[in-house]
Amino acid sequence: MIVCKSPEELARMRVANQIVAGVLQELQAMAAPGVTTADLDATVEARVLASGATPAFKGYRGYPASLCASINDEVVHGIPSMRELVQGDIVSLDVGVLIEGFYGDSALTVAVGEISDEADTLLRVTEEALELAIAEVCVGSRVSDIGHAVQRHVEAQGLSVVREFVGHGIGTKLHEEPQIPNYGEPGRGPRLAEGMVLAIEPMVNVGKSAVRVLDDGWTAVTRDGSLSAHFEHTVAVTAGGPEVLTRRSSDVRAVAAGSAAPAS
Image (cartoon, rainbow, N blue to C red; front, side):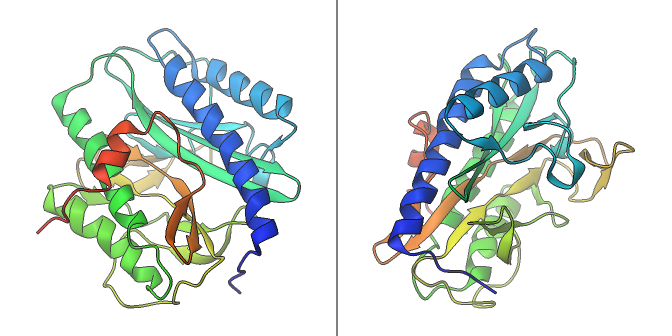
């Protein structure tokens, strides 16, 4: 069942998602050579608890940390460790919180120092795909319009869309209906209605789309070892169009991408 949020519930979701946005902006500044993903995880837990919220991921289905940190060929759900970031890495940082009964969820992939042109293109295209997907979020559109916008843009740039993982509704549960694949034909699936809140999250690979999960039971990596990027925003469907609840002030490139012309 798809749950539409009332104005009061949406106000609570704004609080949760702005906590996530603030934490991610701090992590973005921290990600540098020599920093461990365990350092980043500790920062997430401390900042989330100080805000009065609870880390949403820690303990969720047994996940052991407050942050998902996925480096290079790791797609999603990377478990923080004492591994140090090095110059040229890219790292996906995924944060969720729970406060006053409502969840917030967002992710971005950041460059660690100077990165290759290939990696920079991957980050740019994935972020653009997210913004083009967000532009499809309006009353009366179909869920599949979102994924179609991602697939169309990504594949036009010679990259591939991960199909094993999808976006989702979000509210009093971290994962609600509907599921939001990052591919597919437009005009299918449920219609978007005012009050729906969606976590839209393209996952894009330089190589082929196939992924596998490591023996830790969580970390998903590309089967061919190619780089992967992941960007996510939580977005509310409103009468006036999409409202990005997790927008960060650091989203300079993302905001510009939202006005990009769709790929031909």
